[in-house]
Amino acid sequence: MKFNSTTRTALLIPVFTLINFVAFAQLTVQSIEVGTSIENRELVGADSTFSSDVNTLYCHTTINGAENEPTIKHVWYYNGEEQASINLNVRSENFRTWSSKKIWHTWTGNWKVEVLDANDNVLASKEFTIKP
Image (cartoon, rainbow, N blue to C red):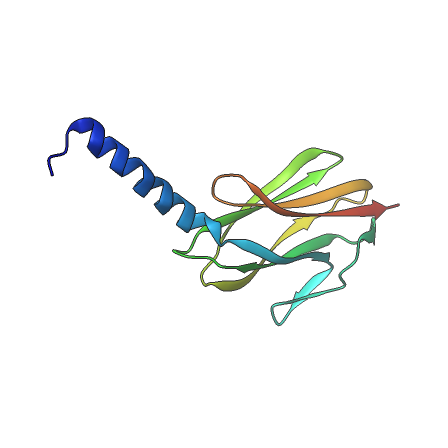
């Protein structure tokens, strides 16, 4: 069978699409929680409401289905405005990771952490509140 340039292009596009699909199709967030500390790689003090004197909060995420050590992001938002973006490497198929954010005592209100994949697709999010 002889291939011309159109035939080669038609054959390559599905292959590249399949490669991209396989790289990201299985990446899922099993859990996402916000809490007051990390001990032995586990979140402590998980809640959805925290006092303004909390000082630091942690977002703990369990990722499943990772291949080829992808990078995810934890993006922290305060009242809808991005406050921090932290890149995290996922080093195995089932992986726990976390980020932390210092909380200034005057930053009361609505917060959210989003987990994004390498293409900035939102995989999961967690909302919480800081009370005075």
